[in-house]
Image (cartoon, rainbow, N blue to C red):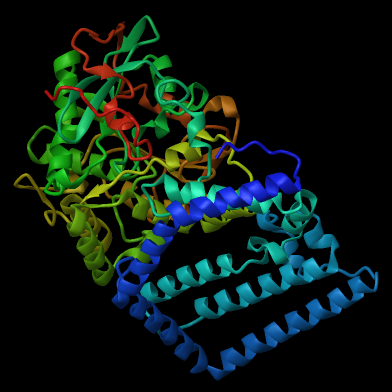
Length: 612
């Protein structure tokens, strides 16, 4: 989408429009037609799911109507707010200054959607904004105040109501957004032509039907701009490549580090640029670092299950690390889903009397107890999982596009609507952003494994009950994990709520340090000290309630990374000579073909590394 912006003129506009219409008729129209056909057939979503959602909304609506007293109070509050809004807007049109309409709202962080000064200074656009906020607030408050409905139904309706409220914001539409109107007038509509061209680019790019580009994906080269920490693939199997990084210090600590990333994305979230790479930070800190790189599964991986991910992932990696370094005890780090798998691996090793292989375990934004899954719980029930399984069994895997869209919905204003506005209406090319590049590089989920994960973790929360999950013939019990553990979560995390991760910290039996970082699921974890951003909270105690923990926590400015180094000093072992990678036995340079051979780059060469 790197189209140069030129001064608009009639000739260019006619040529651009002709080119767009040609592409629309030849290429993109087919994809649009395919989408419509899927909607008609119901292939894009289960009719039962839609009917269930309508039923849930009517249930909530019925409960609202069944409480006349509360309904009257809500209507009175709405009428009061609407009257105040009309009065304020009228005074502004007359040039009379008035007090803040909703003073309690002004103390909150400014909504990024309405940062343009016209939303405040122009009476008409201010009226639109405040009316939208009033309507949205009234709708959501009505849903949240309903009683006599099971919590899951209430959360599901609340989630999709928020999607609706976000979608109808006046900031999303040309006719009701002053900034978009101004841009269209200034460019004489050229922004709309560029936006339509960007839309066609996204439709034609694939593999998703439509995946809004949040960043310029051509601005990065894996192994050069990102994922560039020097290292080598030193082992490979059907599901993983194991990468060992070259030392940058003359001496290294005896015990290596094994990082288990989530298999839903590529590992290099931990190795974006050199200045925000956790992997480089650990290597420069004197550690021998290994990381698992997961394959992007296709139909050939349909039969691989959770046990395969356990065996070919952390269990296999620990064995290989011992062969290379001669060290049996390893410090481990698991991020998000990788943290859940790490807990399973630690419990499994304990069950087979090899628990001493893990010297310490660090869980970054990872759930062990799934009783508080947050908005992800909206998508988890028997009916929806059965629908997921139906879709997965058709291909042998769940398309990474589906998972990416689900996660984007959790932050629709930031990851969907802002990009739609900038790319399709303002007609701007997305700016290079390493984090969003990684975010667009989603992976597929093999059918059998993902079904196990959804059912046993999210739906039934079996991991917290001793023996309810059996791996490779051994019942596992996370309460038997007695190695030292460091839990770090993020205060604004919308994927793994910190109140939920805190429950997991209380499930293991070894000594635990729980740390709460500022910001969200990514920025709170990938926060290098050099950035001097955010904060982290820590409390040496681990009371029963997460709120109680928060009350007694001490705030520390900056990154949590140095705190982890201090904590791990007890478990890293003595210093010894650095361990250079045996390049003669290496299979490939990092990041390896399991990363570079991904769906976002169909022109990338096939993965030709020999399996061992």
